[in-house]
Length: 293
Image (tube, rainbow, N blue to C red; front, side, top):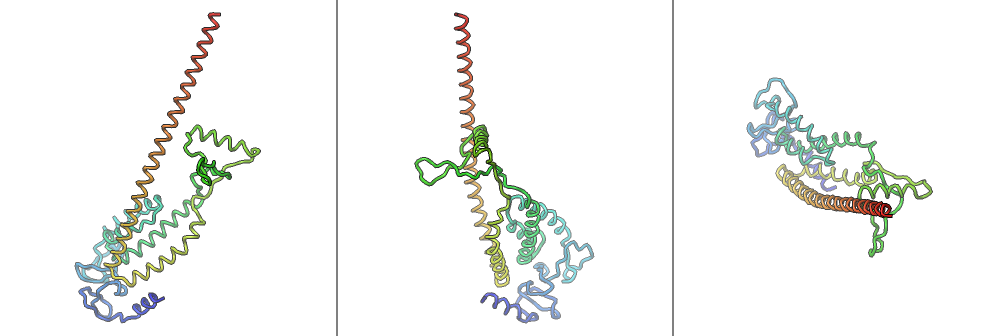
């Protein structure tokens, strides 16, 4: 509540007050501001020409450099940015991440948006990409289509611990285990699955997510650009580090699981070949005995 009061007080300040800065704002006959986010209608900064200007996307008309109402040397930035934005949204949605850590730097470096404006554009882009992902995935099912209504096997020597079904089994053993499961329970057993989207978890996280979004808006309003960018960089660096650690641990685990599966399949094939050779030897010996007799 105190933060909201501060924001309200700040928004009610004199918009025509001149600040000690070299950024020209055309409002009120021309004033100087320290941050173009305070220059209503001219929120974008061109440090080279020291002006606040009105940013227009894909404006192919004539532009006058230094004119706040018609300052537009960014046509190719917008064209390239739109293409990169499209592929970024596809990759971010496919990987299941929001993409804010990519959108904000792209907005600042490529589209020449101010940090806070790039953050707002990032949130709008994440919403659009999330909505598209929801439409695509709303009818999809979880990749695990063999969920059972029975528990796994108790782990020997560890009371209370359960070994999941199909753990450490070869493909042939998994198929045989699934067949035995369906044959049990008077033939009424079946496999289950669930939607690929965990709606219970989404409902659980949504309130905190919306509260965090409100907090982010307040932070944007209160903090200067340098502090806002510093916090964003620290958060992004931490999440990148945690993502790398998770990737490395998952890679090692899956690599070990593949090696173990290959070893078990090799042993099963070797055992099967040995049994076949023994049967063939027995049959040859039997034939030899018959011939001798």
